[in-house]
Image (spheres, one colour):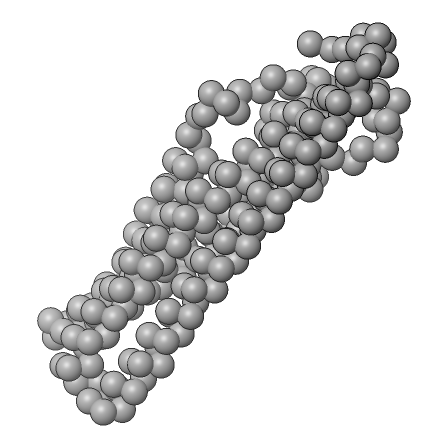
Length: 227
């Protein structure tokens, strides 16, 4: 519902602007916390991975890659795999939360421009709360031939990058298990490759399902005008 001239210039206009500005700053602070937690989660996982690699290197020097090393390595890498999967799941939740805050700020921006439409040339971010509007606010150009769901874009995101690392850990576990069962070198290589590919596929499907989840609160109220 748009505002007429009397509503924009009425005695409650300043109050409405103050309420909207307060909510806008609250959403900006929440987005900042979301980014901080995302980076902290990634840093924590990489620290766990680095510590595990260093610990396994020390064990390998003591056991010379014997049965004890294989047993310890499988257990340690399983813990790293769990930490990686948990980190990816949390990052996907944080990305969904960030998308929600962007949609909320677009709605507030729409209210700003309803009250003062003459300011529209000065806004770079979008005033529409559908997916194209949110992507415009996020600075993602979908008109230059780049699809947001493309493989190149997916692996540039934090969950996509960590999915490859976690898949490599899964491949290492499979290779160690194959060595434990006295598999030939070709069998070890195949086990590693199959585990890596399966992990990438499973994590990719998980990510796509998380993006496609519908939320009634995110239904567009101010959709972008059709070209």
